[in-house]
Image 1 (cartoon, rainbow over the protein chains, first blue to last red):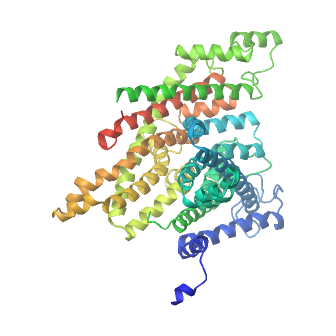
Image 2 (image 1 turned 90 degrees about the vertical axis):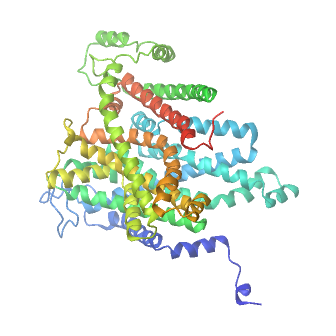
Image 3 (image 1 turned 45 degrees about the vertical axis):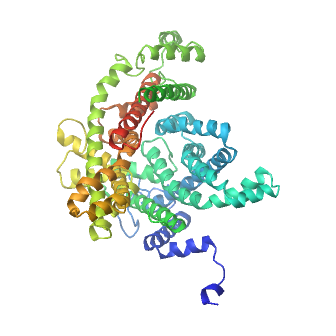
Length: 287
Length: 305
């Protein structure tokens, strides 16, 4: 017997993990993202400057020893505000993605598994929703909801599940013809048990990839709404709000635009690289 | 072909209907009304205003009235721009948005395709890595971040271009770049992927085997095949450029349709918002249909019957 045959059995997930760790861009992205996330959690809690304290001697001043990234037009510390905004943006991104994953997986798996007329009807509904110009509706929703943060993430999640439903349905269609699913049927498993125990666990790969790529999309969407003045409101802040304030003050105080823009860009970059890396790791076929 | 077109058009009708319905009730059920920002007027005048715009009728009746008007091509009067009908505003703003969008789309497709194809031909070279990194930036960094940064660099610091407003060509450059960048990035990545696949295809091997020069093979065989996914991506691109233009017009203060939408939503200008939503929805649907209809011309394997 050779060494290889004696090695402990390797799960596909472990294989994927090894491949992911070999992807330099993805590994660097994970580390950078971890630092940003840690800063978002820690900085607002431990900084000497509270979120909305006005430093009267430093109104709209550039980076200094006291204020690492300068202050805004109201003399508030930008370093704290950026990472506080990050809390909001990241939380919204994750929460909305979770909503999208739950709805998308349930919808897609049901449609794909039942098939026939139910499938046709459910996917037709997705098609119709797909054709709607969603930005418009989210903007209208925000006007309608009175710019409430909690409802904003529900809205963002509710419009992001369509792709997920399509991907999951496609996968389910192939999965349900596989031998192990037939075997489960033959052994008398109930349909719900088959979906929960055999179909959904095998969907996790594509779902994980897609979820990673949904987070930056939602963050981007949130920032966009906030940028237009339709999202997060004072005294809270988010990256979109900071960028929009910065864009208005850029001629006199470019740091107000540059720092939030850079950190948002870095986060989106990392999430995209991690998503790409995950996809390559879980699906080793050449892209 | 003809029946396919008919079927697609028939399929588009319920979609537009759903869009109109959702948008109508969403904006009507929102708190606040179009005349909130006026100085306080006596209740009789308010009642008169409401009656003039049929706002005193039950919502269902207003909805039916609106559907009837739409069928006759009448989008109604704007609530905020008192002397204009929504149709007039759309007609006025559309050429501006169209110029912006078309320029951005053209640039996106041409630059993106060239960059992606070139990167694929020089796979793993420094140029390939550089192109794909830039493309990743274009995808990751949203245009409302790119636009102010470009303005800061080219407008404020270097003073090369005006920072906002609308007039000559120089006013259009920054908005067009900001609008085109993410689409350039998408097209480049898409083209690179499909080109890499095409370069492994049998017909390319045949072309090489029969002694065709690399250049002739690329120009005559590979590029055409690699362009197909880009073509089918044109529909989503249009939608993206349209939504992008809402933001870009807002940032640069460009008098197009996109700006009406945001202003209209904030001002509860019911008819204007509805008009923009319907107008853009129809454009997106029409463009998708057009792309699907033209597709068989470029890819004979696809036939609509």
